[in-house]
Length: 226
Ligand SMILES: O=C(O)c1cccc(C(=O)CC[C@H]2O[C@@H](n3cnc4c(=O)[nH]cnc43)[C@H](O)[C@@H]2O)c1
Image 1 (tube, rainbow, N blue to C red):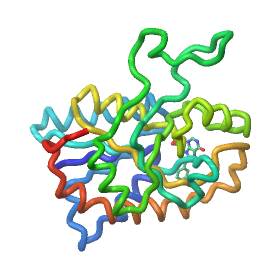
Image 2: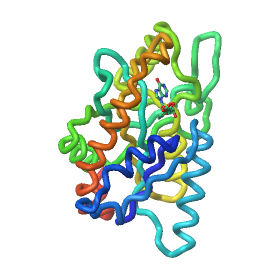
Image 3: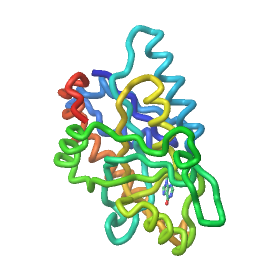
Image 4: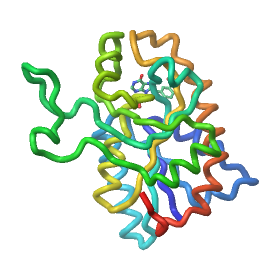
């Protein structure tokens, strides 16, 4: 079982790696990568890593998009964990006189990827993560009005971040299942960068990987029930 973990920045990659000590041999199956900020960088770096591994004869069985994220309040408080049962891109589409229209309604592509149900349930149980939709945005939400609008369009959204959909697109192109886990560093809403609790969120991410690594280690990718 080989798992690629794509984070955005080195601090997130290191928080994931910190979960794997000598007493946690799962480090041999999980490879954390800092792939860049935003969906395009995430897709490119994930696709490159998946291709290199496949060409090297050791393909990955699962990809995880991991890092910090914004939480929709009050459902995903700062410091909590959110595990995606849907990874949805929130701003890929067109603005029209009637409002935002996703690309799928324009006849193109996809806007949602769904991680394997059974694995999501199992990981939510061991980590205590809240299970819901995680949105991918290219622009961090900076106002209450935008947060309300996103929740109106995506009532099941618990968190937003900037990479999940890109990671999921790359995984789908390789026929590999995907997960997304976010540790909430800030509320989604009016911008207050000084209030982001990055250290707390990174510690939560380390804790989550310590608990979920054994689950991934014993997971059989051929048991995909969806
Ligand atoms: O400054 C630092 O020490 C530091 C450490 C770790 C991560 C960062 C980032 O700025 C990562 C940016 C990353 O975070 C995600 N994110 C976090 N909050 C939100 C949000 O409210 N809306 C969207 N994305 C968010 C995002 O995935 C970025 O890639 C800094």
